[in-house]
Length: 81
Image (cartoon, rainbow, N blue to C red):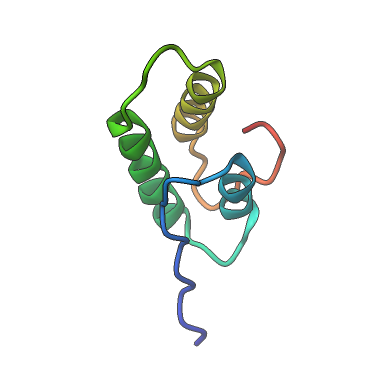
């Protein structure tokens, strides 16, 4: 049995592309993806903001949609995030 892959660290410079890679990669379990996305949302919520950030807000909304749409066993491989 192949060991589970480690999800990427959630750093300050986490990009939309990195999030899409995690969602599209079949090497991660649905539960691991969901937990990782929740951590991403927590990180984004904790980041200090000087003012409104439309890109960040759109990313948060899209991650929430992915979590709400959670279909067990099916990776989110489309470019909706």
